[in-house]
Structures are given as structure tokens and as C-alpha cells.
Length: 113
Length: 113
Image (cartoon, rainbow over all chains, first blue to last red):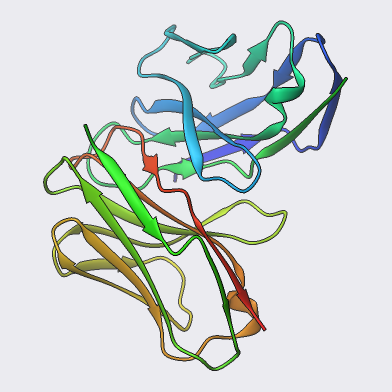
């Protein structure tokens, strides 16, 4: 079946540090890939997505590239801010049908000034 | 534009009491609807999803139930709450047919005492 594996947190970084959160997946066919962010006490928000191999999703300085050869979708940001402190979820969606999204377990990021 | 409403935002209920959480979506037709639970410090657990009125798929057997009485309304219920039902409940919708991402509601923080 489809699955998503994320690096375990928590991740603690200083402001302006480089961020990488690893995400790998197992899927049949050609899934779409997503990163969601959850700020404290809130629901999840879509951060970025990619729908086919070699696509790069980007938003708010975050980027992730859909790598079919390594089945990965790592999240990166060049310079994190305190306001980026949140939980980040990687997810995949089957190519077709109504199968629910498969989420990773989430990675908590804390950025300190 | 599409919006999703979830209420109440917080709820404190005694053990053994009933539960009803409501979620409605505006601006779209025939959405797929989902209920997730997030226990403290844990990932997302898919509880129920629905691809149409009266169609409910249960992912985890427990004392919760879900109903979809109208196209854009999704209700999570329990006849008797347990302490273990405490958590953060999230409703989400996606376009029918799958393959796309979700839009989440703002969540309900349920504390069973």
C-alpha cells in the first residue's frame, strides 16, 4: 500500500539556519505529493505541492522537489524564522480515485532567536 | 470561493456524555469529506471519510460514528465519550475523484474529563 515516512523530530534550529525535513514515499502509480503546515492550535494548511516527477513546489520560501528516482519530497528552506515554528506533514495522494491522503507522522520544528 | 466551517472550537465534556461535532463546506458540490483526530503530540489519525450523502467509510473501530445528512455537512458523534476520546478533531474536504489536496477546518479541541 501507499505510505509516507518523515524524519522524526523535534527539529530545533537557530533563526536564519538552513532547514531540511526529509520525506520519502512508497506508492503505486504516479501520486501527487504535498507538504502541510500546522501552527499551534490550528488546523493544517497546504504549504506546497507537486503533481509529477521533477516538479518543484514552492511557497513562503519553502521548496520541495518531486524525485521519482529516489521516491523523495524533501522540504527545504534557506533561512528559517521564528514564525516558521510549527509541525510539518508530508502527504501523498493516489493518482486517481477517492482514496484518502496518506500522511506522514509530522515533524515538529522549533526555531529559536 | 470554498470555505469550511467547523465548530465548536473547544469543548469540555464529562465521561459518558454524548458528542456532536459539525462540519460544513461552502462553495463546492459533492465534496469528499474527512474526520481526523490528533492526540497530543501525535500524528493524524483518519477516523471517517465520505464520498457522498449517506456514504461513510470507517477507518478505525471505536465508539465514534459519522453521518452525512446533506451534501456539504459532515457530523461526528458519540453516544458515550471515553477519556481516550480527548484530542484535536479536524474536518477536511477535497474535490471528488481524488488526486488533489485537502482543505482543513480550524479544528475542535475536545477534552473529556
